[in-house]
Image (tube, rainbow, N blue to C red; front, top):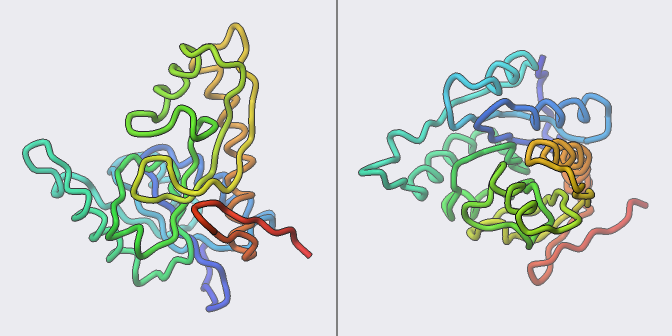
Length: 219
């Protein structure tokens, strides 16, 4: 179960919209002592997704903040949603927000209050931006005929996939790849580098200068 959190503990909030595999992987690395942090709150943008049940199984507190009341005439109020999400997380005082398959746009009312990171299934800045998510990315990679893809962990800002890059891992694109087979290889890379990035931030090893990250070695 999620035990009490001391003031000195590096606090994480996790945002998800689906199965919660990224959250489960992160918790596994926390339990193994590889990430010096604790997940203090999970928020899902969708009801009845597997990630909610997985959070409960891990003993993590979880809330749902749906999109419906922020959508009017098919237009999504990103500012309103972001403000509500920020207000929801404020009492939990997260030091870092981890987007874990969170399929909702975040805007300034949230990003100006919380340091937030995301993982993208390609080597940014290639194959990033609005509309590049999930299998759309892998399909575009295969259509372009590139020989290398990979995963990128980056800070989130007001532009899609344009925040400072923290770490990346390349994977080969094989001649017989399908979007599914490439996605599996990229997801393996994501599972390695996302906890690594969270650990580096929790240890105070990452700073941002001129929209680039500076990462120092552990002493």
